[in-house]
Length: 336
Image 1 (cartoon, rainbow, N blue to C red):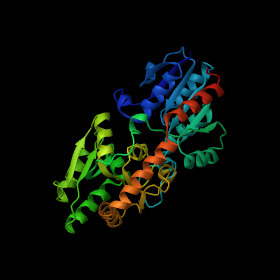
Image 2: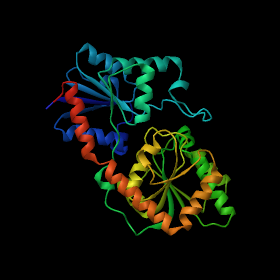
Image 3: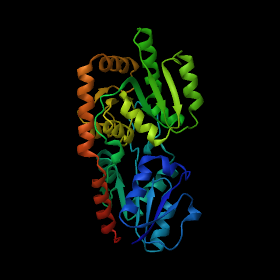
Image 4: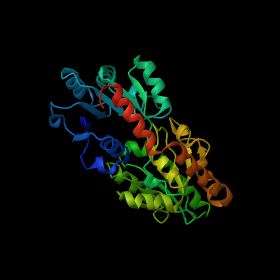
């Protein structure tokens, strides 16, 4: 049994609520390792066998420490390598120069980089000219794979951390405008929004009020994991019209729960959704409104997409695959 530091520069509470952090912590423990969770640099001990780091932005100091101690370091996360030119969000190339230097140094100096999607796996390996890189896709927990449910309510659902820039990247303003367009047409729509609260909550609520869609949109805020699964299994359609996705864990979870998926073909989304969802152009509330109306009005199409999304999740995103990859990658760096 190895002593592995799990380091993520975040609030400790988040590690229990954000699925992809929890997956890796659980996977390390399931493989029989002692896991020491650290969220601050000063918490990192000097006696460990390896360090597993989430996010390159804060990884350089732990990586340097591991090199001094001659211990392996592994970094993973979503890189947000290059956003579409028309989207003004912050990707790697729009970060300050000093941040790009820190990220590049961490990626080059660590023992292994684990990328969660093939899009960033290919682009980052070429840009940084690194070979210490492996493919390590996200999965969904078996709790989400309970089978396709026929008992669903006529509702849309979206799960999104309400930090303002994240809301914009996830296309939430366009989703709200689409609801307004459907309301103007007299089309009945019920949208439920949930996710960890961030600095964009006021912006979100203000937009809902300005569009006069408070009856059509219900903001739930932070919800429990059990409630999230219940909503994913009960809503007809999961809508995520993102401008960019490094993977799309929430979309994969919705697929596992058998929801119909409406999303955008950006970043790694198609690698997750395949042909089991309906795609719209990012930034187009009109196209999004038409897609929502289409799937909610066409029972056969919606039910076919629901069954297809569940089957794809079952085939592609099971937890056994993650355990096996992580076990092999740890062995590659000398941890067994």
